[in-house]
Image (cartoon, rainbow, N blue to C red; front, side, top):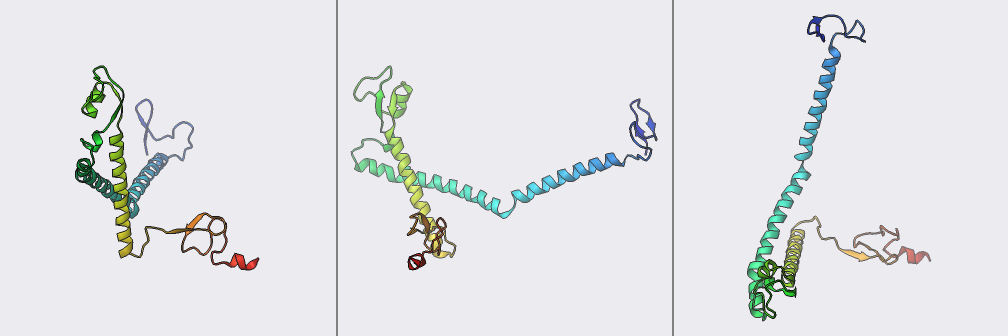
Length: 196
């Protein structure tokens, strides 16, 4: 097989430093090995990306983000306004704040009507209403997820909520179905007490 020399001509002689048995197959083998590695890498990535567990995790994360947005809207738009009316808050809960240091236009008691107005004036504020709003959202999302997990566990044999008890000997939490403690390896049926 002819090869191209540095002068731009073709020759049948081997390149410098090669034996006379050189026929150009080494370059082809090198390219074939590179293609095989690239092909194996690509197919390995496709197998990884589209296997069942990764897709289940992706769908779970998408559903969880949508569920969180739904519960946040429920708490912010449905539950908190009646609480603001029932309690003497005079504003939405997330608009409650305390001025720690007034800004340039601060007029003393009752100087700012909204949190945005205080922040725009450069005041140092403690937005406790916003924190309480997030806390109620967190509790709402947590309770809703627990309710969904309990409902799933009621209709399925696959446990999501794992009940735990304290080991009688090392006082660490273990599964309530465990025969032996995973931490101190003592038997939970009382065998340890009968030996002594």
